[in-house]
Length: 177
Ligand code: PNS
Image 1: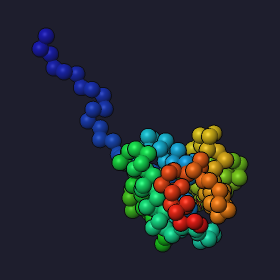
Image 2 (image 1 turned 135 degrees about the vertical axis):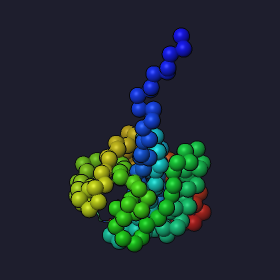
Image 3 (image 1 turned 120 degrees about the horizontal axis):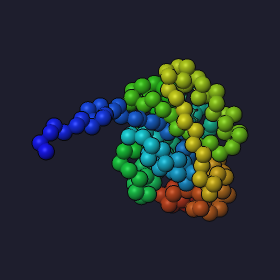
């Protein structure tokens, strides 16, 4: 039968790239962050992990070090090369989203405290630029892990390796913070 091939529905439709941003202080990046980054990378075509200067917090690590540690952790964990790591210290987070064409922010939510902290920011970011926020539940194995807990354990000489990627554990142990 030499009939014409039937058109495949949607075959000619060019889909927009789905681009998302995972913002945070990442001071330092933890296994909880990495879990969210890995799962978010599976949902979007491009994922930007953005280290944001948060003036409300006094930082342990400089922005450039936090970026380098995330890059190393992403590489060592074999995460996809659709992940870009960058930093942002001037202007609104949604300005970065507009610059890179991202329409979604992804945030990990461990507790009701996180929901209360994140909800107003999600509403403001949508009002400012139409950027939606997607909340992602953590893997229960990491639900108790936070950067502040890691900083405290490291400062008191404890072992942080159960909570952070190997790159971060060696960095913190080497720098004796
Ligand atoms: O890891 P953190 O410290 O909880 O991350 C908070 C962060 C950096 C994502 C938040 O402070 C933020 O979004 N800062 C960007 C500043 C901004 O755009 N503010 C206005 C809209 S909320």
